[in-house]
Image (cartoon, rainbow, N blue to C red; front, side):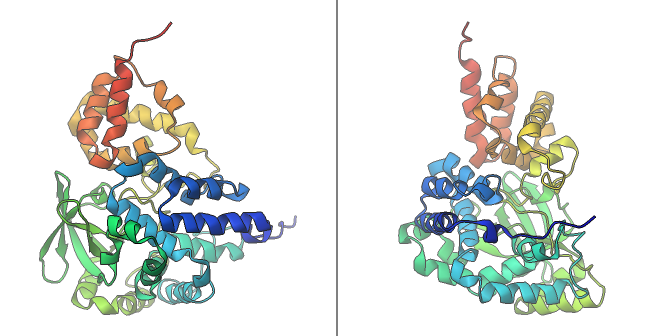
Length: 379
């Protein structure tokens, strides 16, 4: 039995598709999410893309979208500039390969059917490639020359340029604030809690960059951080500029496993993976719905059932998964039709619990459901 030949999405796109992609990118540089998502989803191959879902998220939030979330999306936009793909992007991918894949890529581990799929998987999911591309190789620097100045001002993403890498021990997350301790000096940094401890327990270590935000306490991780061992975190904390070299040495020496930087698909609304709400169903935060051709829309209602069940038991049962629940409430697959099944006087107290516990950027969804629960039933 012969395997069908590989054909990339780019090779199957028409000229109209390529024009739509270019115009969608221009719309993103203006912050016009409505036009960007219209153009992006006009390409048949992108109907179920993560990028499309993130654009729909920004459309749904509108002016409620926090500056850090939009800034995170802009770092993705910076990476997708067509002119980067022929130079800096290839260098970032090659460097990441030298650091984290000393014996080559395992296409089985990476979920690829064809070796030709590896570059796009590394681009989308490798933490080292992303960090190098955005920061050390200048994608973010280039973005600020092309993006709308008002958009840059609103997000504060200019202030993210030059942010150093750091190694941290994860501390407690209390009342919207996460404490990260420098893995070398022990100095405490108060950062916006975006759910990291739902997957990385206190006492574990991560690599990441702290960047400014207008929201209290004034700092946020620029992206979902990389879980790592204590010795590596301490080495990076001592010498942040040498972080790629440190990772390469320790990976090649067997101190950290190969493929260590190949993470599950990232999101922009938390420090958790995309569709982290699968944890509500006992599948773990990293469960890949696409791996088994599972349709998120078919199980998102089950996840909401579980969130409301937890809410029925009280706030203390919701808090450990409040960011995963926030990601669920903001997921575009949770359509008004699906939400309508959970509106009514009996569910109102549970929606009140969710509104009180979920983080501010998702609170309006629960509050809107409270209003919906109060509407009189029609015959």
